[in-house]
Image (tube, rainbow, N blue to C red):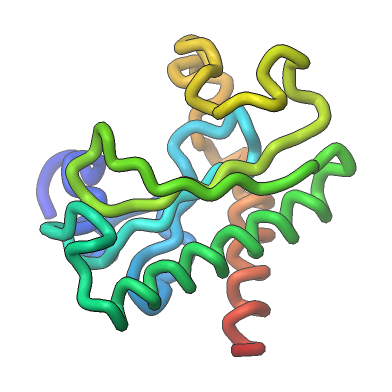
Length: 159
């Protein structure tokens, strides 16, 4: 792959060149989010770049993708609960309004979030949170990456 892996996240993952990949799952790739203002934010990318929506997949693969989403959500929940006593819950969502490929967002939510945002969708956070360099994925997030990856491994070993 040449150029910026962000321009083709799935292609880069298939070629082993997407640095955000945590684990290869049955129907996709578990990746940690580029932005971490809610530590543990992760995404499940489908493993077929041309698939735009869940309904584009054959039924068996669709169910596998949803199962992968469940596993990633549980792994994020377990890791965040262990690392932050103020962890509350995980929100799962498949949107597809911006990126033209099937993916699912896994958002951990915490008690320390601003009162006016804690009960609202993450997308209502101010734009600055999404672009602030303090929240960019860096090596400081390696313990979080490792925790989520370890939980994915544990979950997959019990299947």
